[in-house]
Image 1: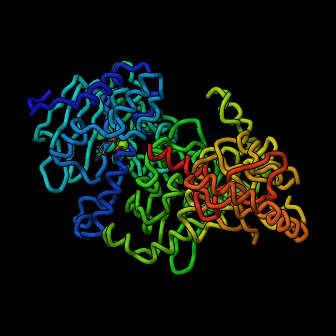
Image 2: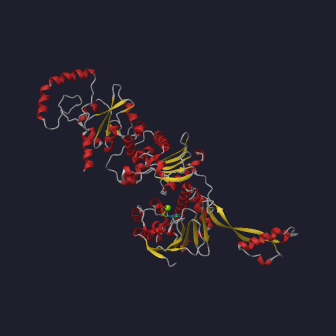
Image 3: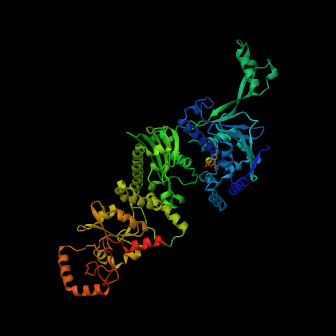
Length: 626
Ligand code: ADP
Ligand code: MG
């Protein structure tokens, strides 16, 4: 070890490294994916910076942005080198040790309770996976604004940094030198490395090269030049090769030769994948989409996405996009809806520019993952300027439309399949099992139903489309969940309204005296039991020209012409009674007392006025205020 300036790892980082270096985790392969993905990020960064400053990549030191993987078998060192943006001394200190990522402690908790190390990249600490296979690591890095430095650590709680005066200058970029553990010798084999790159790095958009030695057999004349006949060193044999080629006429060569082996070293180009979104969707298999999804999201769990859409938008704003719906909503999405940022990566003419651009998607679609690659957005503007562009609005509109189409497709492919779950009585894993048996739309609705409802609140332009996606229980839905389309199809000939009521659960609503007559006369009533439904119904006034009617409000009308006449008579007849009653309740926030047609068995009931909050809304708001 060098005698550099020494630093302590941040405590959580130190704990994490401790766990990793002592881990018996069998899938050590993942380190390569993490390091190559970091190299790729660094290359993305320099390419993006060069858009603003053309001189950055025109100075000859990086004609091609790429990644080189090389093994020094004598030293048992594996090196992964990129000519990306590189790190200053300060970057090295911060990024590789002293500043813990926000996800570190939750990742620690997860792996300590048996969670999968495979997910390390998702938590922003992928680099440390290198200690699955290394007991000592050197990171040599050169960033344009600083000198070349060496970061080194044996994962013993500290790292040190020194100016690099011994290695050849990198020009720009980073070289990670991994000193392999004794039990990680397999990672010094080219075959293994080639296999790993092919398996884990197929969606990296920069060339990856591997330093490979090939055994070559050269025919050599037996009686000639025996001095180098057995040599295997490359230079030695280069000479030899030239000699033989220069020899114009070799008489009787055939019978007298015997093969001599030598090793020829070359950079082998490993990944010739074209970016998946540029390919024709017809040529892409579901497996390819699935593995692209995992690589894009760094979610290397078993969960394949629920659906994807891959499309090409033309017109004023041209772009290609691949969007995915993960099969599980991530927990962070629920932390604070309004701080969610969209997870789409934005490329402009194949160049990665940024992710998490708020203007790319509305909040309610923040659960989508994917990429958008635009041919028409201007490439050399700042993120702030980009966000102001009207063409970005057009792009967003199209992306939203395609996303909603994709969701509708899941729904259409899976009609009628949602079994309603009763709130209680299910153990967690039991619920998981019923999930398995459920159709795709049922899974979608369970994971993302609330986002669709938020969409109804936030996206007036797509409100109708979103309303179509909503599922609910009703007096006629039985075991299943129903849709507004089903409701409308089941409406009675004389029925003009869509009846609903909000409340805590189906049972409470089903037995409410407010619904007695409606249910007795076999009108379908929607039971909205989610607090969000209150807000949704403030934004939905009608569906397919049928007006929504809250059955708990005084505006409910269930009588035909004849009935109305009868009711008027009754009102007159009982005028004294209703007046007496109103006076009796004066001061109790009672608007009026009247004769009603909505009851079948119950003598009296309290309703709310058309313009006021339903009693459930009062409950919801009160619960939020507490
Ligand atoms: P993440 O990649 O999610 O940020 P990592 O633990 O993989 O988390 O990497 C930590 C940080 O170290 C990166 O964000 C980056 O700033 C820096 N880094 C790692 N590898 C490189 C590299 N090859 N070139 C430049 N910076 C790097
Ligand atoms: Mg990383």
